[in-house]
Image (cartoon, rainbow, N blue to C red; front, side):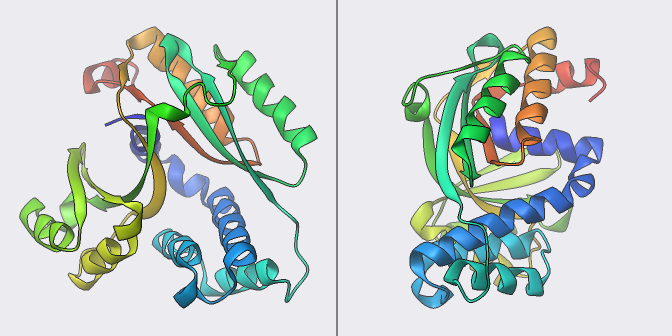
Length: 249
């Protein structure tokens, strides 16, 4: 497993996911707002909004929060005007990093991103420098204790899933972006609970990090995710269980 999903599993191992749930809700709300602004407030005719709502529900975001975000996006209630952009860079060991950002002020966001890279053994890159490494995919994560691999495969593959990866105590289901909602719904209909459901950027290759660079990379990931305007951090690194255990993560 690599990058974004590996980082999420490490956060779960550290018990950090619940601690950051409030910030997660803010990021999910931003995506709902922008999706509704671009494609309208009716999920039936707005695939991006349907995906955003599915991701919010998978994180147990309250229904009222979702509805309020939709109304902000459609202009029914006043909201902030967010702009989408991406930043690219490199982490320790030459790891490729792609940031998805939503901001109301690029003049604030870029210096914050640059500082996070510079202070944590990374450097920001030119546009297009690493984006080619990643493919946009649907990602649905399931607790391995909640189902069997056979049951999951039957539900997910029949609905159009491309790949199922076992990592630590989770199953990760990857889909083409167009099949994401069908696969998520099929898993839900099969009575299988999801830990998360999102559109992500999957790296086509990975860089395996050893102890020193692994620690630096995890620290950089944390600093980048702590930035208010950063929605998602994608990276093409891998860290073995042996290295993680040695780091006491």
